[in-house]
Length: 459
Ligand SMILES: [Zn+2]
Image (cartoon, rainbow, N blue to C red; front, side, top):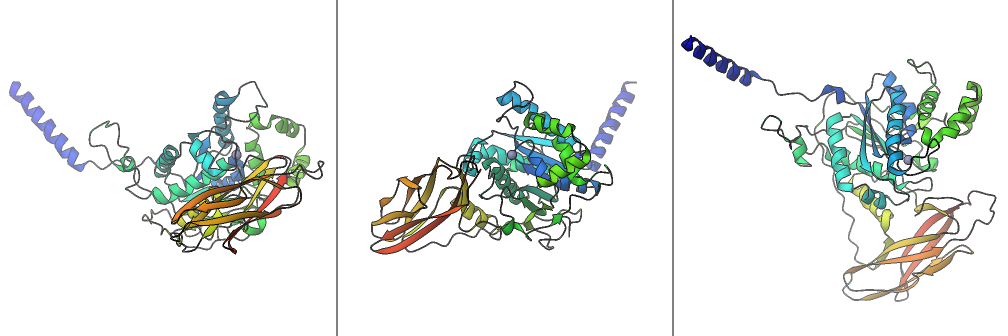
């Protein structure tokens, strides 16, 4: 008996070692593979793309969604819950809204709502590094062919810094997720069973990234990407794609209960009339960020895309040419975006010239400036402004001294007047000019278009 048992044990060991040699490596979890990964900031932002997503799902595409925040700021139209409690509710509302389209793979980066137009403040408030690490992880998990997100840039429009932050992070994740040296513990395989730190993901290079703008500048976005009618009828839901988008949006009750109550009292024809007047039935328009598989800018989103993985492609970083003369330029988010477009091969991306912003009437405008002095002598620059009537400089004009080989940060602050016609919500944008002079010559001119509104997010 004893020898027989020993024999069985030896045999079992032999089977185990044989099985180990033949064991295939575990494959990625197919349930999380997406064709499209949508990256937005807040619950309800997905509405910017749901009409298109409903169409893509009809065509058999799988969609996953990432939100930057849970949307814990703002009012609550349903109950008393506020702040983090409201965020917990809005996470469920977002999941239910996407659930109406059949989308269930949904993640939140854990950022905090930031009421500002400055993307840099949003990135700071979202714990930028951790948010990027998590988004790169989710790209490697969902392996999307196409990423859709807000256009990273600053414009007259809602221009929410959080919307911009989602576009910045998505663009960076697009460029980084295929690089095996980026967040390498994500793509290292555990050596022992249940090894708790290494994640076993593989690098993944998405093929295309498209943007939708949070701006009112259709003139500069037209013809820069594909357009889709939202009036076509869905094969699966038998309703127009705009209506699928609206019926999904209705789940955001803490943000829109009064609107939903209004809809519930209307018939379909009245709803269509109201929503058409509000732009919901306009074409869905995207701007092509980049395609690594060719195709045309205005061609269909899935043009040239097959199911195969493509190799990682490292974008060329175009450094800004170093000047040799005294110069002045806009700093802050405007300077960031100029660098960002160069860093990510996005110099073709539409952006307004001159730069623009909408601000609340009666508030203030801060113009951040870099004064660069690459020469070998200390220099003095005089800053002056040309402003519309009733716009008043409160600080920052006058002389700025910049040491040799140094860059000085300067800022001009302007008090904005009240709206001339208080019955209106906004005025036409006005152009303002900052002129920089030194030794009797002009060394720089900075222009900015500024629209005054009854309400706007802080700068
Ligand atoms: Zn939003």
